[in-house]
Length: 549
Image (cartoon, rainbow, N blue to C red; front, side, top):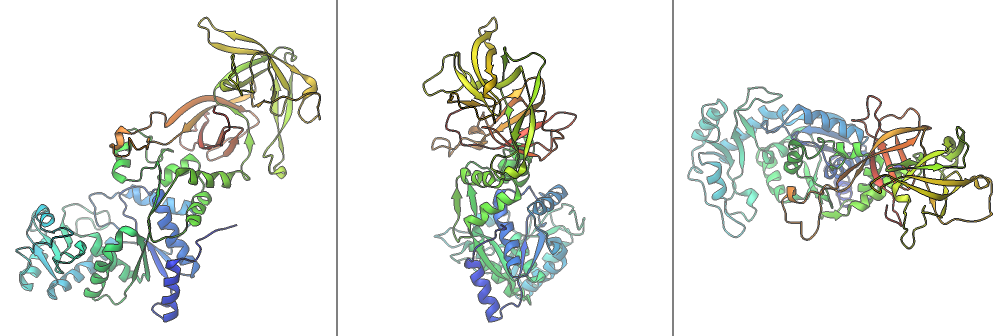
């Protein structure tokens, strides 16, 4: 069943606007800055923008906020589009803030003519220092009362490239004593001699976000500018620019709480450092909470969207545990993906009384909870692999798996009993010998005796070698580590690589194929490193186990 958001304070506001005739349609926008990859926090923003528009038969614009060419790259532009489409959404129009540079410049000139903007010769440090605090008003710039004529001339000269970078800015003239720091003469244009990917070298002055964003919304006819909570204090400035720049259309900004997930890194600065210092395998490393990383890990759009849908939309920020996200991917996969056996840390077992050279094919349900998915045939012979953790030479209390003299069931196969332990010259166990009881074959209805343990296995001669990557949280988050720099709380066990086996019944394995490995969890064939005959599996999420492996 396809989900969406339940009625909420945003839909209540939109209903009221439509009823009162404030707007006769709904137009939203998703406005990412193309300076990095989208992460899990963006999923809430994306779904809110697209789902709210869909509820009202409205439209969604994808608008790239490309007002800072020093940090932007076409690589991010392409990745953002791909990630949105992967989530299942398609925008109605795609725009760039740079499409409006001429219009924004003209509106800035209008502010100057109205005496509401001025060129300031102070440095960025001086502007910041004189801005004031929450308890102290700001100090007006000595250039605040320049004449309209002088400001017009200086601003045009800024545009013409006559001044050094950083030597002058254009500021709105509002209120240096406002209790809202955003209203204390914010900078709206700065000088930057950086070529722009869309406009080339036409411009050497660029608008700041707080100026470009509301005017871009107004130009596009956005009705509801839905944004995260940190922009709540910017709303008076948003409305001021729309009003004083005399925009014919007036959007409504509505803020919602951001979503934070424990044990995830979403800071672009920290993510970039991890990538650049090669601590992770690029922006799509499965340990990262980027959409690309989650996708490569094996998460599905359905699981991610259902996760944010069920959390709902709130007016306050929310912090949820990573385990809650894991619940949704398990729920999405448990009835849809095939199940099979895989051995990640192999230990050979030789069944000494099984006929040499004989191979039989046993039935393995594709998904026991979904009988209509059928069964597959898996090979079984004299030599098999089991997990190293499924054998103990000296078992601890409560251990019901294989140990000398104990009998267990091989899943979908027979009972076997350990008869001998083979070790190398260093005392390491390298092989187990066992016997089997042919009367105990699964599916025959054998009731002669019961065993307490069932273990999985893979045939030792009829299999596919695979690399399996077990992922854990990238950082260790505790009371002791919470204030440490990111590099000092990295988890040394965030990636464990195993060389194991799956049955050769899994033919034609290809990237993005997902399976549940019996007792291990859910896994997906890695789309990046699976090549040239090498199969790599990423663990999406483990199963909940009653006994530690």
